[in-house]
Amino acid sequence: MNSVGFRLSGVGSALPEKVLTNHDLESWMDTTDEWIRERTGISQRHIGSSTTELATLASQRAMDAAGVGPSDIDLLLLATTSPEHICPGTAPGVASQLGLDCGAIDVQAACSGWVYGLTMANGYLLQGMDRILVVGAEALDKITDYHDRGTGILFGNGGGAAVIQPDPSGVGELLSWDLGADGRYVKILYAEHGGVLKMDGKEVFRQAVTAIQRTVTNSLGRAGLTIDEIDLIVPHQANIRIVESAWKKLGLSMDKTAMVLENTGNTSGATIPLALDDALSNDRVKNGDVVLFVGFGAGMTWGSALVRWNGS
Ligand code: COA
Image (cartoon, rainbow, N blue to C red):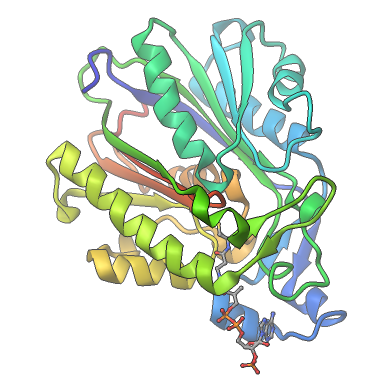
């Protein structure tokens, strides 16, 4: 599919220092640490900082890991569902904090945003760009009601980023991808201007499991690969039970899955690069591995991508 190759040459992430634990929530919400852990797999989430700060820090770390400076970046794509303003986008401010002199645009596809960004980056590489920053960053505490036990238990802040560039070596490659959206489900997870997230948790759960199955099957089919050929899965993580249910249906293994949910909660567009950075820090990826990225979220939107890894 890709004649220029594709590699994530540097990955970085950032979390605010302030932590909101299940026990903190217990003190003002009719819930328990045990219920939240059992029903979601989450023990704590991070709050504070801002989308711009988290995007900037994660991006700087990704650029340092790739060994590149501001003048090397040709484009910034920022996946966020918690932008600083309705207008303008958040990406230009992040680009200016980083000292970039290039295009910068927000990608609003909720929790699937970073996977959308990854596939968009591939298009720009094919058009001749050399290095693209694909960032996911969220300050979801700005749109979360931490007194609502349906949503307040789930969401937290964070940032993650990757520098993406061509790979002439022939190792690194975007093997296949799949994107989807179904606007009939707008109202199962949404926030009005100036409002907080509203959610029909059960319906989101159902739709998410279906979307994951469909998109992973499509990406595998397009790459001509089987489930067993995947070495690492980096999923969006909103609730451990969504991942477990979808994996059971697909025959995927939790042992091959990069999870950070317990300590971060659902960080929407930031989740996948955060989990990838964690997997890299724990030496879970080696060159030549097949890595599956899969996201789903409000919209509904969903997306997946299979990458043959070349990080070096
Ligand atoms: N603490 C304690 N009890 C709670 C609770 C909480 N935070 N939230 C709900 N309950 C209670 C309900 O009142 C209900 O009690 P009842 O049986 O006496 O009526 C019971 O627990 C079950 O509630 P329900 O709403 O059916 O829970 P659930 O199993 O659907 O779990 C979510 C709720 C939100 C955790 C779950 O639906 C979910 O995670 N959905 C997906 C959300 C998501 O992924 N969003 C982001 C997508 S990117």
